[in-house]
Amino acid sequence: MEWIERLNGAINYIEEHLTDGINYEQLGQIACCSSYHFQRMFGYMAGMPLSEYIRRRKMSLAAADLQSGEEKIITVAAKYGYESPTAFNRAFQSVHGFALSQAKAVGQTIKSFPPIGLQISIKGAAQMEYRIEKKDAFRIVGISAPLDKEIEKNFEAVPQLWGKAAQDGTIPALCAKMNAQPMGVLGVSACNASAEQWRYYIAVASTADAGEFETYTVPALTWAVFPGEGSGISIQQLEQRIVTEWLPTSGYEYADGPDVEVYLDPNPENTKYEVWIPMVKK
Image (cartoon, rainbow, N blue to C red; front, top):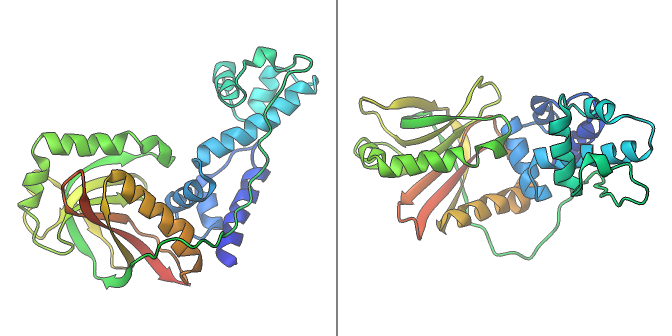
């Protein structure tokens, strides 16, 4: 299938550039999506973040280089993009469980992580409900925080922003400005391929005066909208199912636009929400 072939093409690119730098934007171009969406797809399908996979592959090859006894540690570190022996040792130990100083020891057991290959697995999973909706551009009003281009580095920043918004009165103040569709508190990952700086917004759709808040315009797009309910963990599980079960056989692929989470009921124990994914027909 073309969709899987493109993802595997990106993985082949990683293998070819383990020693001369991996460009995340190029990975997205090979997979025909933004680097943000590529990282999300890879993480859900491979079961680990992209940066962790790259680290494992580099350290697997580095261990083999060191055990050959022909290269110095500082040479191998530079080969795999580590400017400091300390950072190289930290990465090596996180993968193999022992320090670089032990790598050349006779009989030392090392871990090998071969390249992965992605494929579609047909499952008899529960049904998924969704609708396809075309929507004009709409303005949102809210607060935001910058996002790193390696998305796993944002796993702390986004919850911290939500925690701050819940504690300082931002959420009720935003709800007072909500006057347009979609009606709910929004979590918007504005990570377009053309965006110089990625940002995450907690916001509402509004035509009201922004006042102290920031504004952002969500572009006109076609959306695949998936309803759900439960905790914060359940929304992550839904997003994983969208990527691994629905998307490969849907006839759609990612468009260059933000991801939107619409929280229809703010109850943290059992919230009702929708996941909006920007789509384009293949």
